[in-house]
Length: 308
Length: 318
Image (cartoon, rainbow over all chains, first blue to last red; front, side):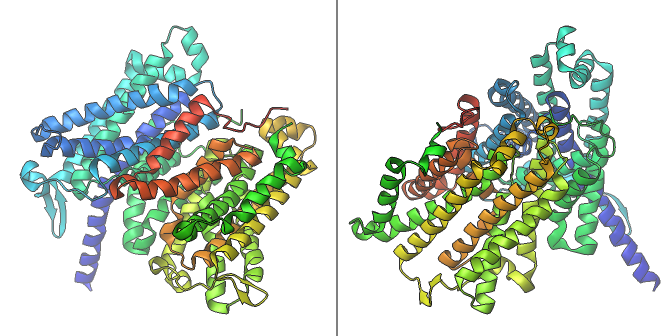
């Protein structure tokens, strides 16, 4: 009896650890959706593809697919920078020309870009799942950092959690205590008034895309390491789940995105472990629909702009 | 006057078109014949889908990102009824359409107050849930094994085995759907939808019952999608959850974006251009390139929105 309970609780604890890991990754992606929505009221469907790009670029740089093999940490850094740049380019090329167009046009463009980038990755890297060669990533990643009985926390999980916490704190500091952050918040409140006060709206939006996409890229790399798998459609599923997390937390709210990501990660792991593994993807869809229908502002969201 | 209004009312438009389509199966095409006819049939299926999808984003201005859900729902309704009960297609088609309409209303009713992008997200999530259920409820749908051996369509006891017979069947369905859509478009109902599309609040103020009219649009659109799915299941004789992925929704959306949202002839034109093109690309390109052919659709959507948001056959603003 006692051993059964112990075994059960260790399974529970292991699931908890896995759920928190997954949740912190969702939170990193969700923040990108929420920041962009906050400043230009656009659901950036292509954000999941930026995350996928982060995984692919770090993989390619590491394995020397493009002719240069970089050491691990440098490859990660370059990949994150490329993602940030890709986000800025995405905005300038696809979304900026449509700022004054009907919202539906920008939304459809975002979907188009998502499809385009995903298939571009398919074209460049192929459909096959790629994994990182063991000898090229730091060896301690998969070693246990902490161990309580049967519950194992790997170094990679610790790194994921610490990275997520660190980046979220940094982001909060940027948003609340820098000129850029103030400009972002001003634009979120009233774009016209902000530009009348001398805020360079286009530049701030670019920075927003850079920040959000950089975080997305980090998440992509972490996930690729965690599951040791890189493939073109990875951004699609993660993107939906992170978007659901952003909606749950209240789109436009950064703390909301963090909380939403955590809840969704836990729900997915526990739902998959205790209810039905074949429906674990469905949890994200169901949460998304229910929140939108019942409490469209989410947990922390401000009042959504009504039908224009 | 827009082409939509002239399509059925002026003989010089519809007679040559109809004649061209009717003689298609009898053109001398040699060994390419069966293939050309297959692509032509598929194109007509997508024309029906494009007309159906067009009702929601085109007429009422709400973006539907999950249309493939109704296509799949109709295909599975028809496929399962046929496999289990061997019913005639003339019974199965209306039942599938009815089931589609039912779920269209169930999906639509709670979304009435939502803003446009949230509506799009709900439609997307809903269709993914439909496909997830199809994939996982093995007792009902056999899940990832698919449903093979669905009987071909029938006509007064005769089985429609020949490709040209199936071609005429979907052509008939297309004409029915086209007639319904064009009639509704120029009726009180259609005008109410356009009013909702242009300005929902203003429409409400002049006494348009926005909720009712939206629900009717959802039901009609879903019914048409399910109808196309039902024919598809009986024609293709095999259905599988992977046939109804998110991409399909985007492809159908692409058809009406190209043709011009809200334009009936535009929806037809979009399918006429893109579906044969897809099939040609599948043959011409090597396998690894043709897997990525959706790249072109993504690019097409982006470019259309940038430079020609109203499509090739834009609906004139009245």
